[in-house]
Image (tube, rainbow, N blue to C red; front, side, top):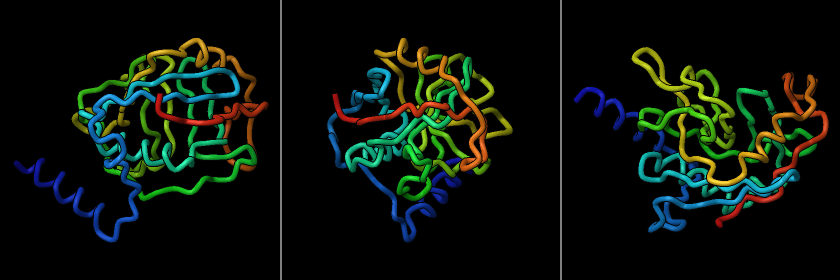
Length: 195
């Protein structure tokens, strides 16, 4: 009961003065929308899990529908870990972001090879636009009794070979991002669209 009350309070706090990008009206009858992520290295097709991750999927669909993911890059590539994108353009400038969303990592979906999940900061409810693909099983990113996890909201149904090719990219340190594992040659996310 206490957990349900806490979740309700958190959800209400996210709705106050909210500038959330809610895609719940997009394809409302499609519980498992399939999206094509067209990259400069090939296409990745992902089936989203709206039943277990409705807030996260609706957020992702809004970014997709509004074109905010178009012409962004994968800015983090860690072989045998994750490929992350959805936050920066080729000039490494941040894209327009919506409000932070509620963490749905307790939905029963796990960070296993081929899943897509939301990136965030230490604050468990700090995810906005950035997402990542798991290149391996990563149980350390799942929730446990002491920590929130990272919300998995779909899985790759085609294009794991594309992700494996991206994983082999040469990476280095970016002064602008203050981060390592940034591809030397930008890997473009050309478009994200419904299949």
